[in-house]
Image (tube, rainbow, N blue to C red; front, side, top):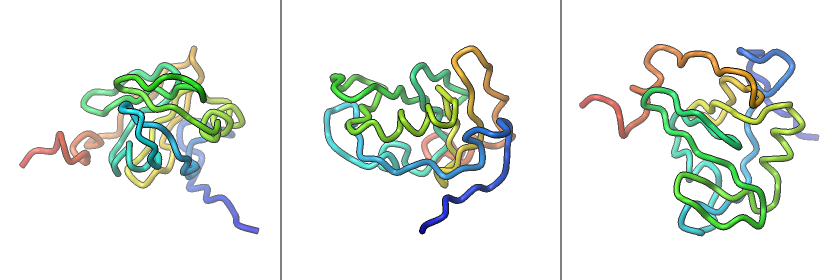
Length: 128
């Protein structure tokens, strides 16, 4: 049996924070099938049903299976991601570059402020 990594409780005790996110196949905004990591690209990312972007940290909307691809969104073609988020009582996740959940929230809950320097770790916004 493979154990699921849990790094710590983070900001959301008992939920997704500190857990490694599943690596499902999704459709990107252009309709191409790829792994979730191909979309997040090893950077801080906010994902969920209606994610709110942090300052300089991209947000990606998660659409249910059967949805048409849309800009700024992925389609969870097999329901792996949406099922995992429901199991962990979250509609929005903040992913670290290593795909571990930094924070999780329900639709009516605010996300914590980004950790200092999070955006600087994202290659496309880092200073030269």
